[in-house]
View 1 (cartoon, rainbow, N blue to C red):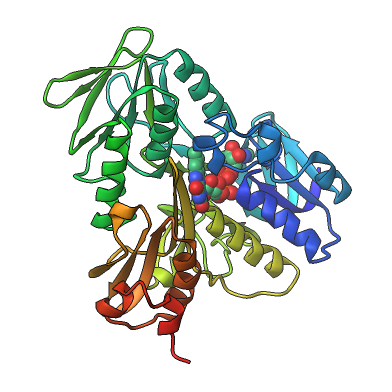
View 2 (view 1 turned 135 degrees about the horizontal axis):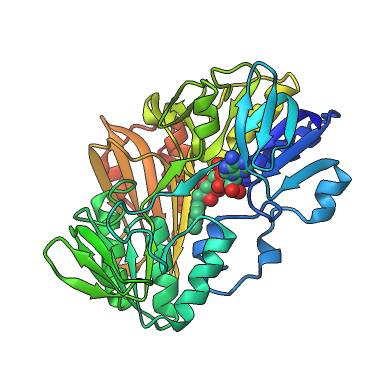
Length: 407
Ligand SMILES: Cc1cc2nc3c(=O)[nH]c(=O)nc-3n(C[C@H](O)[C@H](O)[C@H](O)COP(=O)(O)OP(=O)(O)OC[C@H]3O[C@@H](n4cnc5c(N)ncnc54)[C@H](O)[C@@H]3O)c2cc1C
């Protein structure tokens, strides 16, 4: 088998590369190799509507099967790429197939990071990344009496919200002294902590998990102070490990992810990398090398690659954005708040309708909006513009954010 473009990973980024190549009238052959058996689907609903049983799987597929057939995108599913020969331009799958490429796009995301503690791999301990994970989590939660969620990031909080709404007893454990510590400021963390507690989640902060207990199935979670919390299902949401081993073995420059340049090219000739597995210098992080785990980043980097392949090269330059749904709260974020030195509240969290604007050295770098779509839309504009404004101006809910932009 030989294709002009081989995409490894049938997720958000991989699918979008193929979509954009065909949109750009690319007439060469394209194959997507994916480890999961499914056609590309949306991952965010796995901890939201799909997990809650509000959306069927068919409704979260990115495109129907017909779309890929009509555009002649070969879907080589249920196969894992285990090695890359960059000199010969060949990848090999776990079934021993060799597939030749003209250009290779590595879009493999990552595997859920699991707890490196005794019992961390017991049955009943569940990470959340794939449809199979969400199905297993859903099935186990139906009979579970008490569920422990480890990790107060977006995925853990979303899972806790779905389970609590379904009437389950949930204990959520977070090692830091606040939830969302990696991605948001303290106002937002405290708001979500209150919400979860009011909805009945037993939220514990600053706790350290020492072991998962059980013989052939999880029965509890032991904390460093000796307390054992009973559990018949443990959901782990503590981040991912980028799936890059074959590229590391092939000699690609890698750090926390595969290193890519602004055109998403790796250090290997004709090999690109995008999405959750790609470490890139992001201008909204002041050029720091980061991996962004978001649909926005996967899609926008996919577009950079597809355009580059058809000869329309333009560097990656997209404002990061993200969303999270918990209970009836819609959080929308733009920019990256890491490193902020000032956080301005816009509106009152008690009304469940407010924003937090983040500044660094007087410049707006990010905004988090809760049930406040207008602020989000206009917030993207002020973050993109790198607006300089006072806390007083930003806090004034009578003034639309876009009115602060120079005419
Ligand atoms: C539960 C959950 C909720 C989320 N919620 C949000 C949200 O609300 N908003 C948001 O912006 N983002 C959210 N995200 C993150 C978002 O889904 C990811 O950032 C996005 O999927 C990244 O796309 P990707 O193409 O890099 O990787 P993925 O979509 O993960 O696709 C990678 C694919 O590659 C496959 N693969 C891996 N290794 C190999 C190999 N060697 N050979 C072949 N195939 C391989 C994997 O099986 C997978 O199917 C969420 C993620 C999860 C898991």
